[in-house]
Image (tube, rainbow, N blue to C red):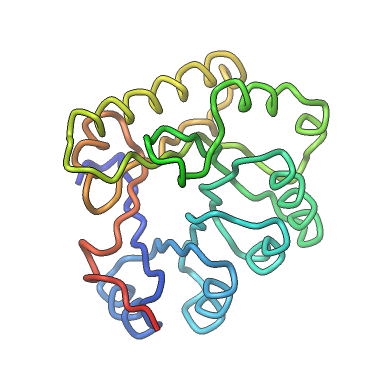
Length: 210
């Protein structure tokens, strides 16, 4: 693993005991995709864990994670960003966020297109937010064995990042993250410039659904 790439260990559906084992082995960065599950686990685990929210986040669930979440990867609307800003203010925090882009062929994936992202960044409402910090972009590639398609989609996300950085954050040192790559495609993502990978099943095995 290159030193510039952060590994988010994705623990959704895995019990606290599994996370504690990984924590005791030295890993402190974990990702969840359900707000209430993250809140429950956070209360039971050591305070120095860095929590990343990686799933689709509904506005009415932001309140559960606002007191402690380190990075929200999945901002896909101005409405959601406004809610994060509101809840962060209540806790006197600045919450770091990534803009999620839709880069995959599947229609089921969430995310902005480039024009929507520009519209958000140019809006008066966004520019009034004081309790969020945009730090980069996130995207999920198509779930496929076609590595060339995956590579093209990651290249597209990298291009979006570079265009937005140049247009809106040229002097901002915080805007530096490209969150892309999961268990099945993270080696390609790293080759294409990922700074954060989200890996679950490759570490903990398949998820356990109840």
